[in-house]
Image (cartoon, rainbow over all chains, first blue to last red):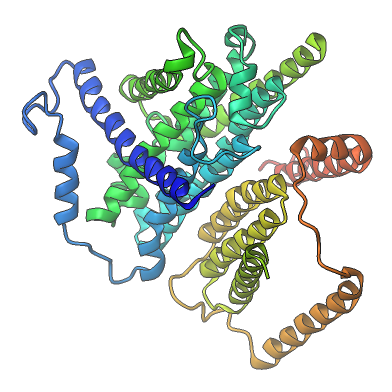
Length: 318
Length: 168
């Protein structure tokens, strides 16, 4: 791999990292607005408020960067980057088309899981270093939630990888067949729910419950650092949506997949992202004990059953 | 000296320095975070040696779950911002700990350096090969370990629930 190729690949990932989350954010603005019977942002940029998020970005960049006096300054400052960078790495390993991924590694599924699990550290660091009781409570809740939901998430990914017989995401798409929509359905549902919980999106937003914890671990953050946390959240939606599309919906498989495969992956990912947004509008926030109950008493047994089912399926069909 | 050697040395140095800082820092949460850096250094070393899967699983399990649990436990009990003066150890205990650490290091070096021999060949080990070894040759130790962990899990549950009849 030449130096030029490395630069091109890095720039492509960075561009995707900056553009796709904005796309999801704008979709959220508009979809949520229409689901709630209102228009959403309409003025910025002229046409249906398409530049609203750009305007928000400019606003964030202008705001004062405040570090509370009691805070642990170093940790407080690096926490947003610890939350953000793992998703950048995860996005680099996602394949869009046959042979089209910024970084191709044999165990890309494990790489994605490892990267997204590191992102949780950023939330914890932010919550602790803020020296604010709301932030600390939010960080505690998010730690409990992330550890609980990590297990079903890993098990459902393991089920898809077991069915494909490979840890490489491109290999999973190669092995995918429409039957998986039935065979892997419980695993797919578990993955979607656990991914929502990992993202701390409603109905799993107990850690940042704004009515009681202000903004949870992000309470003390302002300006660009706060924007980085928001970007990490939306990049997380992009990563998990595309991962769902690649693992369970067949990625670039579809009509004209030779030329338009990447478009299929993005489209399927967008559908999943809209689903994530829909969940936010449709469900009220779950209580902390309900969250844990769901993870340990529903998702984990279903994930284990799916793993057993996949194992039987693989043994029988080979 | 190739670039791989350099990368290995850098990762190793990172792991050692972060490990030392994790032990010597007076701030308990910083110690946990330095542990993360040390683990990432070790994962980097494994990656340079071509053991991609082991490196990734190390990050997934230790950084993603174990350190998060450690931080959770610290925050639940006591994690002050700034140096923890309540648990400051007297000088003689610090010295004794340093001696014990140095003695262990010396013992390990004395045992391991003669075994090391010449430079290690970098080998790309496929995930399939790891799986075949783990679930073929080493399947009984693997199963014994998982039964041990299961026993520990059930025991923890039993202890936390208390005796029968005793209301929690």
